[in-house]
Image (tube, rainbow, N blue to C red; front, side, top):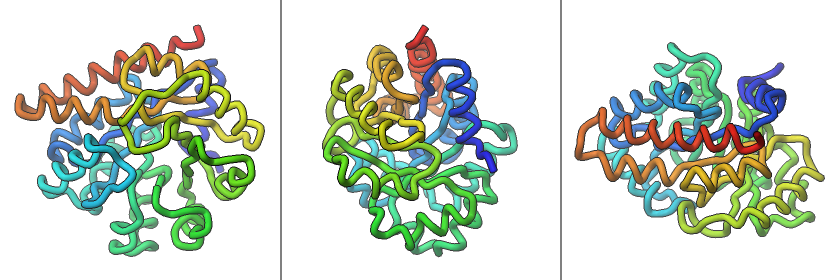
Length: 272
């Protein structure tokens, strides 16, 4: 069975272009504004949407996304409300893939089987759970695949050829290549190095390769889009929410969607 992710990456390949993956934390800066931004992302040019599941201890994330999680939690966001956010989005959009990204602890406390059922019913297409290595696939990865949810794994500059097959074994949807070592938003990727890494990964898998961490500006996104199947932008968008949150919901929405439009224009023309 083909999924929304499969169809989206197949369409991108047919069009001869890379995709733009946008990350936002669910409920940031508040549920209503987050819903308004989410609704506008596809028209602004987002090909795949990653939604962060707010968590009190997001250890792999940099200060910007940590602060976004705290804003969302302070505004009353929960995992149940995150699924409701996707469910509401799906009423107006049945084609754009939505991937939930986060940590296992909230899922475990929600109840793994219940979460997977509810996520599938809400219209979630895949999961990125950064603190579950391949050795723990029985915990969530394999049950997710059995329910028809993609399980997207991270590879990093330290993932060598010996480790890569284990990382890829049960990965589906796409592979997320972390272009730098360290936390999100901390540095900028070096395109030549990323290109070599993506080429190496492609020798091991037919999965699309999306590259993220450190991509903030359209020019950077365009450069990454020339060597990868998609560019992922998160911290730059989250920073705009922090910058404009005191100006009202419409100002936040306009700032984020304006940035996404600029990024999408750069990514979509990268191979033109």
